[in-house]
Length: 196
Image (tube, rainbow, N blue to C red; front, side, top):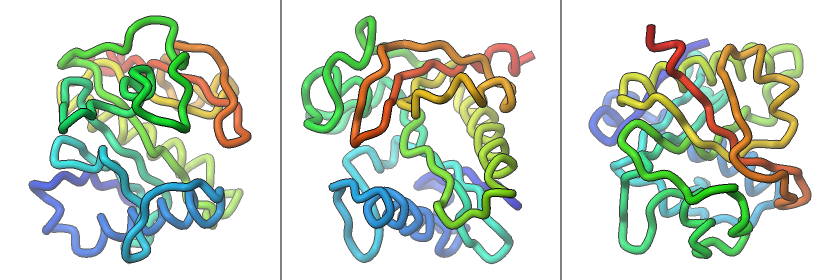
């Protein structure tokens, strides 16, 4: 099991890995979960897949994607869009309630958004925990390399059950809300302890 953090600057060094990650996202989010998301050429994407973002990918030696995640700076802007959680709060996204945060969405150099976090649906149950832990570990390392001390993410509200296992302090930043028949919650992941 390997991890790679992709950016538009290094994407050409990793063959089909970026495309395979977008294909895995489509397979999970559109085919399996039946979410109504943009797709093209067998890949899922949205307005936040820009050169400002990075993508953490867990994969095998053949490039088969096991898990993935997107990191986007909270300071980014592209037209009317910033980052997903903030744009939802601003009423720009139809599928996520504006009331997802207790306070105004942050905009700071040291805070990034973690979105599209997934473990591929065909990863066997006996491997899922290890794959998820590897993903969160590399997510933290990538965030720190980018200068982030915290990441905001919209997660399944069951996060308190597994947060301790991945070694990241997490705090609820908004209420539990149902999205696409799943209880979700915005959480802040604190990577400051890992900086020392």
